[in-house]
Image (tube, rainbow over all chains, first blue to last red):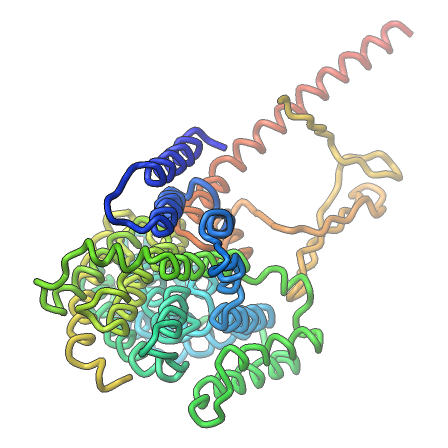
Length: 446
Length: 116
């Protein structure tokens, strides 16, 4: 373990102990204990002193030791680790693993890319459209890795000083980040919003289709804007490029079976309003079928994003702890939002989310903010949750902002300033689009 | 604590030659398997099943192995930096250790021959 991490752990523990012992006026005793856990989690998640998912277990341990009472048994804090949204995400990862294992993602991508002609603008559009579509169903990281692999032969065939190289390599992470907004399984912050809303009295659950109605629209608007911004920043040298993306793999019977099950699962998710099967239960379908029929094996099952699921679980558990201990109510009573119009409050929430997500994991940011923002009395919890979840996907200024950004930066085709200028412009526009959408149009979609 | 490491050159079990070739097998959905064959006598020498394959094209190898979902951009950046610098540094270090060891062994061999 390096010195920086040891210092970060020391700071986290010291801050938590200080919060635990320093008198803080009218804070209820249980809320004060919860605040010390919150401070520790925040420092660990920001500094990544220990792996992000391990912090989730630290949270659970401290909640069980410090917050459980005869009225609040420790199991209250354990249940969120296997909540419906965790099962939904698990199903999503199983689908993603099968699509990747049988190379369906790459076959689909290559086939579609060949249809977008020879104009650089349309080739970029094709890349962004395919990336965004896949990242709605697969992890943004896996989609970016696959799409950059497909694009590298194109990039290497271009002149070193051709801006088209940068355009291609940047368009992929941007599309992956924005595409993830569209579905509940697109990115973990969406899942955190869904689960938080499900547990709020008077709000209730949002279905898969319910999320997609606004998530897809916002995602499409931002993708279109991002495409224009990228084309303005990086003008390709030539007006026309000629290359074919080689298709080496073909669909076999197993691949066709995977596609059929994936389509049935998605169809069931989109029609849950009719058949009333909860989305999390539908997510068990690919899981059972793929593992029972040997499409995926135990090794594949072990390799799904358990760390992401545990990070999600830790955040949801912290949210439950904040509500049960009364910390959320106490915190909100200390922040004065009354004087602000709701769109200004939404703007503040979204800006804080984007700024924090720029430097730390989107999931960890959403974990910390979601229990607080959904309790602000002057903003509808639905708008606050959506603003936080979607804003987390708009933070793409630095290579460390998101895994897709880091992958693209690793290609050595970009300088940090390329990412910063594109990320800043898209981030600011996304912020405005989000606020306008949530202020004036969300009522038509939910 | 000092690292306990053993560095040795692979030999053909049949003829003792160190001239070997790696034959790579790629099967979709499975880890890459490497069969090692003696270039001199064509005998089977070893088989490795790789958890991770890294060629001199570090970035492409990294992408090909990125099956698992990663949580943070920081982690990916660290991994890529490790692969592009530390792997090469470690390769240079162990080859130096190996070469030095073989020179030393050679000198001992020469001494034994001289004494004979």
